[in-house]
Amino acid sequence: MDVSQFPSNSRDPRVPNPEEPKKTPVLKVVKGEVSVQKKSMTTRLLDFVRKDSKVIIDNVIHDVVIPNIKSMVSDSVREFTDRTLFGGERGATRRFTNRVSGFSNVANKITTNYQQFATPNPDRVGLSDRARANHEFDEIIIADRGDAEDVLYELQQRVHKYGIVTVGDMYRMLDLAANHADEKFGWTDLSTARIRTVGPSAYKLDLPKPEVI
Image (tube, rainbow, N blue to C red; front, side, top):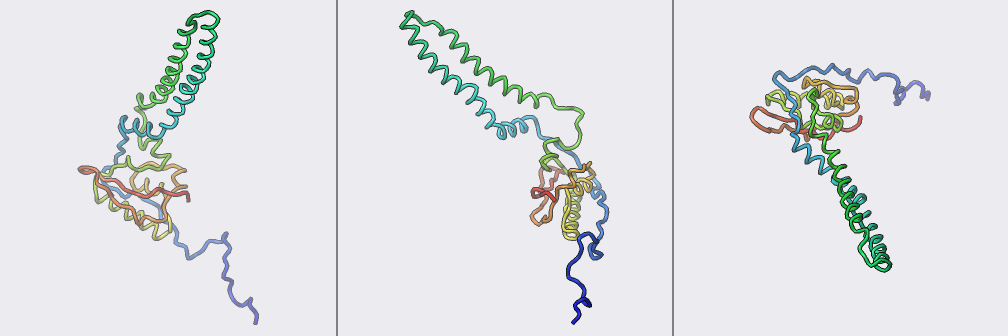
């Protein structure tokens, strides 16, 4: 039997599959207002403390605790020597000054880190840099529930039809600016996605964390 008469089951990945549906352009879905509600300074400050508390603790340990332990050991030896040789408390003022200086250094570091919250950039628009970089969509507020339902439906439809939908696709449906990096992340399953009411005429898309695609 001549097997060459039968078609091959393999397909060259370089050759487009005519059976694969051609993706349609993603258009704006919402008709009402979509706003970006950035976190308040207090909320961002608490997030920063929770995230960077380990850094602060490390600074205290390395800049205060460890140096003061070393200083105490050194001071004990020096004090013993001073009392033996001179019978006095020489150097006490200097030791106190050094310890206070250690705490001041840590305070200066922490103050420097927190200054980023005191002067927000008034010219910044859209999602915050942190939210966009981490693909956090909690800042996006949709004024109309019907719009939120339509966006979620279109996202799920594209997953069903094409197997994937990107973060950039979602931004375009919401009439928000998308960049090249947004096309590298998306979803292949939105079965757990839902709409969350956060206030009067305020709705959010509760989506799973996007994955690299």
